[in-house]
Structures are given as structure tokens and as C-alpha cells.
Image (cartoon, rainbow, N blue to C red; front, side, top):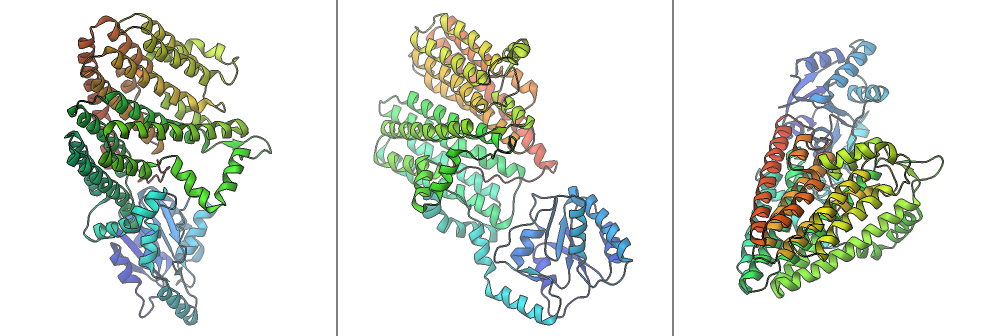
Length: 609
């Protein structure tokens, strides 16, 4: 329930009451500030409340943007201010001060605007949505009112609402091939009371059916899989557009949208591998390689953004780098913007490519093209970010260092070594952390690849990897390239599992490894989304219970050394199931509790990856 308090003298013929009711507000009226303060105190503290000037003239969508967005404790547009429970104390305090200053007299100017001024004077953060061509005004006289009403008539707020439902920045395929019609599908869903979470679930189910079709291994199944994958992506775009269209943002919804995207893509990889196996072609190593590469790409994105989004310039130097300046210059040339967005293979281009190749070729060709394309995109984006980091003079924050340490996913072994190295690490060069992570990871992967399955040397290399991992996180990750530590660690762990499963050379080992990497990758994605939602990292007991990246790597090498190939396959399967159960139960418990507990709604536009 939400309550709107109309302040001041009502205006004959005004639609403000009907507009507020259409947005779900229960109405109260107050002639003066004293009455408004009394009514404000009567509204239960767990409800949204808005103060709206009775003379307000504007679009309904302007009111919707200003008064119903669940992401912000306090928000305002001209003539209206609103507070959710988290912002009620600040609003009540500002109201009491304004009432005292005004003596409770009949309102002449806008009480809502005066309250907003008082909130600003207190240093309170108040969200002001970008209205663009939408009208929101409190006319001072009849002539101004007529002009404002004419301005409302001149702008179609439904057209503005539909346009704003689409991401401002997206990939070429999504922008020109999906969004022109998916926005209307989003409106259709909104008018029938469907929620973004329901559309997100429908997208997941469609993608799972597509994976099942691919798993049939028939040409008809592959064609159906490609068509259904595109349909799933249309729904994937629709859920976000529905959230923006109807302002239905939530913590749970953001988590579902993000995790389901990864689940859909990786389940489809598994479907392709199963379909290929039916035709006598084993491509599980390619499917696992594609998942490893794509996950590492995302970790590069996440780590770089966390390390730099709140960095500050050193001295009088700008945060901008020559690389960033060149990028901005290229963005000024229209066609280069789309080329650069396409070559990084964002989710739209990637899924379209996979769908077409599935329908027209074989799973092996699909994975070959996917691996080459993703490898090029990863090289392009990572090289650009390395250049930016080396040429940008900036100071990274403690928050960023904590986020990178959480993304590292260090277990008891690495943390123990880190504690032992803490004093010595302070005297080491700034490039020590990424170098240690890279060299240790390369050593364990190459040792596993260059020695026979069942040998002891991968165990030795895994112990060395635990040691170098501890050295990498022994001091705060604030160096220019320290954001590379988490992706290097991900590549080392996933790569070791892939190599050992391939060397086992027994049927079922690579699918078991695929399941294990999928379960661990889910844990790493879940860590990212918790950090992005300001919920902190997963609890320490969870990281300890599943061993941390170095513990799992060591365990897998030990299993490979002491078990036969067939037993190793069974052990990987059991480990995959155990990790999946632990991380899924904890993750679902956390996000459902956060949603029920009224955690702040989030909506992360993020990168179109």
C-alpha cells in the first residue's frame, strides 16, 4: 500500500487524483503544512508515502518515474517527493522543520519543493529521474497552467515509456533485431499483470527445451534448438524491458536474470555435446572449454569494473588514459561504435551466432567458431583494459581491494600462506600479485597437461599453486593490474579440471568435469552478484566448506593420482553434486531471505555480455 498526500488548494479539472490512484496510491488531502505533517505521521512506517502539490501538471509516466521506483529510498520530481520506509525518517525531519518555519499556514508555494530543498540542505541523497521530454511542473498562474497542459498534450508519454524500456546501450543484434518488437511484448506482459520474474523463468524454460532439442542429435532437433534459443533471448530482453517499463525492480529479480542467463547458455552447451555424442562425435572437451573461456571473460569484466568504478585520480592527474581517450574518439565515429560492440561478442551476437550455427552446421563446428570468436573477444577486451590500467594514474579504494579479495575465492590453504607472506609481501613490487597468480596457475595446468594421468607431479604443482595464490592475496589488491588475479585463478582451477578429465580418457569423465566446473562457476557468479548488490561476499563457512579455489584444485589432482580413470570419473561426479548442493542451497536461501527482508531493489544494466 502507498499513500499520497495532496497539499495545497485543489485545482478544478485537474487529473492529479486520478493519475495517483492509477499508480496505486491511496489519497489524503492537506490544506496546510501542519495538516500535512499530521497525515504523514499517520501513514504506517512500513509504507511508501508521497507529498504531491495539488497544482501539479505533468505526464503520468513522470509521476511513475518519480514516485514508484523501488530502488531509491527518496525520490523527487518538480512538485512531488516520495519516501520508502528507509527514507521516512529524513522526510519526517524535513517536514517538521518546514512546518515550524512556515507556522502551519495555508500553502502558497509548493510544500513538496520546499521539503526537497530541506533534504538537499541536510545532504540527503534524493534520486531525481531523468524526465527528458516528459512534463512535471507546478504552474504559478492560469496561463502557465494552460501552457503546461499543452506541453503534456504535445508529448506522447506512452511512446517515451516504451523507448525508455530499452537499454540505452546494447549490442547491435539486440538493438536492431530484438528490441524494436520485444518492447511491445513487454508492454503486452505488463497489461496482463505478468512480472519480470515470470518472463525470466519462461526464458529459462525455453532455453532448457532448446537444449533438450539439441540433445536429440537430429537435424530437426538442431533447427528447433536454434529457433528456441532465439525465442529464449527475446524473452530475456523482454524481462528487463518489462522491469523498466513498469518499474518492477527487485533484488531477487536481478539475481534470477543474471544467474539464469549463465544457466541457459551452459545448459545449451551441454545439450549440443549430448546431441553430438548421439551422432558419434565427442565434443565435451570443446563444450567445457567454451564454458571455461566464457566464465573467465566475465570474471575479467567483473574484476576490472570492481577495481576501477570508484577509483580516484592521483594528485592533479586525470583518471583518463590515452587508451580511454582513443576509445572516446572512436565512439565519436558512428559506425565504429557498432563494430566495437559486435566484435566483443555480447550475449545477443553470441546467441544469434550459436543458434544459426546449430541449425545449419554441426555441434563441433559451432564450438570451434564459438571458441575462436570468444578467444578473440577476450584478447581484445583484456588487452584494452590492461593498457588502460597501465596508463591510468589512479588510487584504488579499500572497498575495491576487499571486492577483489572476495572474487579471488581463497580457501584455508591460500589464506594460511597469505598470512605467512603478509609482512614480506609489503616489500615486493606492485606486479607481484598478478604475476604470482599467473605463474602458479600456468604451472599446475601445464604440469597436468604434460605428465601422464595418475602421476604425482600435478599434486606438487597444485601445492605450489596454493602457495603462489597465497602470495597473490597477501596484501590488499590495489595495484594497477591486481584485477587480473581473480581471472587468473579461475582459469587455473577450471583448466586443471578440464585437462585432468581429458587425460583420464574414459567415457563420462568430461561430462562430470563439465558439471563440476558449472557448479563452481555458479558459486563464483553468485559471489559477483552479491558484491554488485552490496550484500557482501558469501559467508566464510561456505568458502571453507567447498575448499576455496586452491583446495579444490589440489583435491582434484590428488583424486587423479590415487584413483583409476573410472574411479576418477565417479569422484568428479560426486564432487560436482556436493558442491552444487552446498552452493545452491545457500545461494537460494540468501536471495530469498534478502527479497523477503526488504533488501533494496537493484537493477544492474551492466555490460551487454
